[in-house]
Length: 570
Image 1 (cartoon, one colour):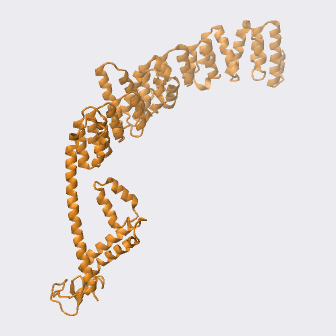
Image 2 (cartoon, helix red, strand yellow; image 1 turned 90 degrees about the horizontal axis):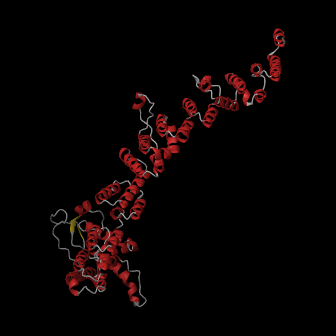
Image 3 (cartoon, one colour; image 1 turned 90 degrees about the vertical axis):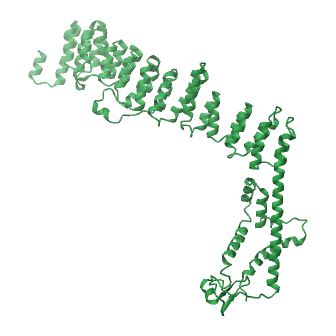
């Protein structure tokens, strides 16, 4: 009667809600719980839900609480706690039909509850299929995979689900669950990773989408997933190196380490030989130029000597190659290394000679081969060769007799050539000094009858030079560059003057002198050349007589006098 009267008087909703609440309380006190809950339902939106929920928390009144909570959700006024409470009511009542009706809505707009909360409650209650339905339909991928992998243990379905996801989500979930999947289904997981790191396309993409370029994850980031699966790791790495040659360097480093490990532990000779060839092939692929040290350490750790020698050669570490063969007493290989790399590092021959000299066994054949090359390239002084071989008790004089004889013969020939050259230079110097003296003290008679330019008979006026050339005045004026220089002698004189200036400029090039002295086969010629340039003129010994200090000026004067005979007479 109160409700009808309030409606007839157009009482507002708050007033009506107050009457419904009082009527519900009255029915509740009389024990009419079904009638009470119907009145409380009419207060939704006005009365605090917790007021009603507290009255029906008793297990015997769970049906009434369920009815109230259902209406609360239909009006979208429920929070996460209400959803949790309703789902718990369904699970306690084991009312699967109501539960499915509640969660299986047709569209997102019909969802009147917090989906993540519902998934948590259903999972906790053991309703995995319902939780999976919610997670899949509402794109809660992480919860779907958690339930499949941690609760149901359905690894195949979890992997299939990841293959349907977009690239970013598939990549993140494989990083999170890859180890679990690899442990239980290694082959299928490896296949998915191959696709993910090369040309990933979701299994849900249409035909048009598959024609567009796919996405590609960083393959190096998935290597830890294979920690306990070396066979699958090898297949994955080899696939990446073949299909995607520009894979990260970590792929090739790990593949090399894996191949070396397999090679080191293999007992079958044929299989070991095959693994050896694979490791060498990978080293020769050119992928380890920037990480040379790392590859070298890997080969040394697994005692892969062929790989170590190859890397030594690529890194031009010829000394290490030599030391390796010396340690293993591989005499023929020592000679081979010298022959192959001796041009780049001549000191290899010296080390080889010293090595064979320390051997007490008979190494005459190898010593002779080393001496022959040392002689041809003039790498060591004979005295040093003799001193080196003196440490070997088995090396007799006959071993180096031919070397010493040839060396002495060459030196004798060189001495004879040098003496001949010295005599020629002395005779030429004497002649030039006499000519200079005659030009200074005696008159010069010009007897030329033809012009040195036009080769016609000389006629006055004419121009004569002390060098002996004569010219018509008009020919001289036409061809000369300077009034003081003979046109015929000028090119040669200019070369001499340029040489003198160059020598004066290079007096202080001590570093260049040291370099040439070290690299030249004839050190004496280098010293003589620089001595002629005046490099040593600044050095004055305390024991020298005072007149020695005048030597530079006398030499400079002599150089100037050498050109005076070509100057024009006055």
